[in-house]
Length: 108
Image (cartoon, rainbow, N blue to C red):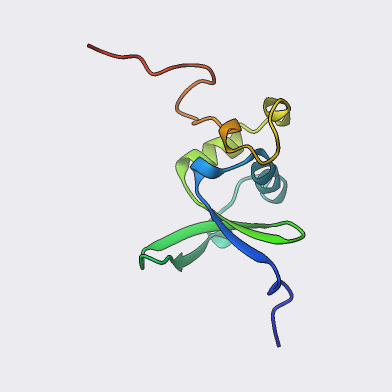
């Protein structure tokens, strides 16, 4: 017997490719953050162990790689921050170590 979600496309998402849609799904599913019970571990094609949390849409199961940046971004999530971006725009999610609009300074 096949699992009920066997028909879903499976996508592994790194923080750099996180979109507003996927971030919103994560925050909705894990409003208080995720814990060890929510983390799935698996080996990727390079035989490396990857840890991820899962969110599902009608047609896709996303495995979002766990990272400190992901945790910080989920904690600071505000839907209004993404209203000027398309739901599938990975450029919308800012690195939490940099303020939006801030640029790295060159130290010569």
